Amino acid sequence: MYFYRGIYCDEKLQRRKKKILRRLRMNVGQISVYTISLASGRDLFDIMHCANFKQKNYDRSGLYIIGIASSYREAVNLVQRMVMDFYEKYGTFRFKEFLLENSKDWY
Image (cartoon, rainbow, N blue to C red):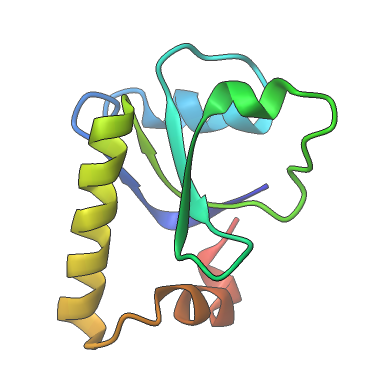
């Protein structure tokens, strides 16, 4: 599991961001945390509840997390903000390819 250095976070989780990221790394269950990650298929993003990571057969090795949110609705709003920020900064929607090319942005 890799985390984007400039990880997006909604206002409700901003204070606890470091703690939440540490718990995600250690696979500790959390009730109200949704993750936004780069999709493995043709889509740009996957939004999923962190309880999915507790499943034994879930492969977390190639997961690139770029945002965390307190609810599904907040995660959708965060994705919208991420796409608009990226487009304003770089002028393209090739979000996935750009982030994966810059390996120094992940930890």
